[in-house]
Image (cartoon, rainbow, N blue to C red; front, top):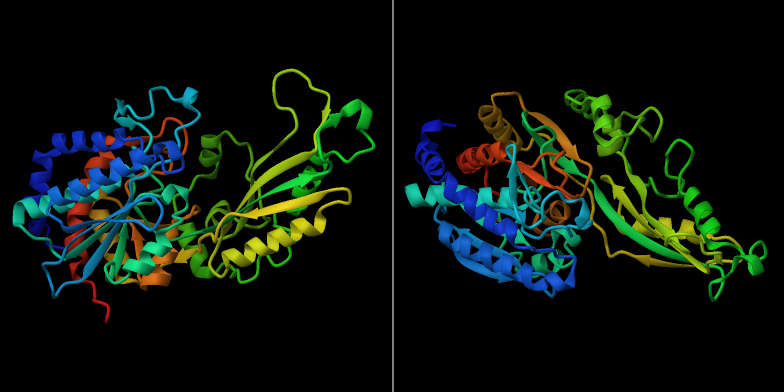
Length: 466
């Protein structure tokens, strides 16, 4: 890439940096919590803010797209008919901030401390969403055009699993046609060395209730003669895994490919310190399948996790009750080759099979889930972005995967035929989804530089045939 091509927009970004930072804070202040109905108005307010900002950046055909859920924002610049089209994805909705008492400062009052901006959504995903818009504005303000065609799609319900994204893509697929998706969602592994993610795991969800009686009972009058649902559910949950952590559900691993030598070589190139990783979460020992490395378990193997388990009396003091029911929530992280609905069905079948006599079980499936995603390792966009990031950071770039789920990746592949490369400047340690989420100010500046350059770097991508 000829760095001189980006001199003007990069200089504009440096001159406008303080204004851009203040506008980023304005977006962060909007409590766009998509999971909570009482914040629906705030989610719409954030969508309107993003739409206005798209227009200010110089994009046209700004639209609000919605199919019964929270709205998404679309805009475009298509002034380079012979160049490829890049679809920029991000989301403006955020996770609930609770538990509020664990925040050092209020979650929607962004606070800068020691080079870190603390607020809900500061990192995930308002930072790189705003950075992508600022980079577009820099090109338009200084040259009046972009190096390639750009479409933006900023979603409003990613944090609830993108329940209506499929319907939006079905209805507006032609509008979103492009040659590549560049995702501002995701995250880097380290704050001072670049990486590019080449895949993410999928997900499916279940929850269930186990009942042993019609009502709660006195533990002295009925205990020992009526099955305790908490004991029963503990045994049911324990049956889901072997002693070594391998999932014990029949059919769970159907379609899972074995780790290849190429996979192992990529994992070996990752600067991963297991002891530091354990210390960072306060754990003493890694767990899981035998003869698998931590990164292999996090990125290349499927999991079944119990996210919640409850029942009976949970208040202070003692209550001598024999409860009538117990509950649990499950999520499975999936890898390539696994179908979310088939995994759901396998887990549900196992739960029914092991439900003990004297109990009944009610299972609720959590929607259709999302499939895993992998980008072809020789995709030309990967090499272009790796070179760009190495130039920005001054350090070699390595390849990673995301243990979590980006629903858009599999959906864009299946509905639009698009490959997706994440280019987020959030870092894995920034406590997104937890109290005291933060974003590094230095990542804001690196992100601006990288995003203003990436449009030029991707201008040489081959165009997809219609």
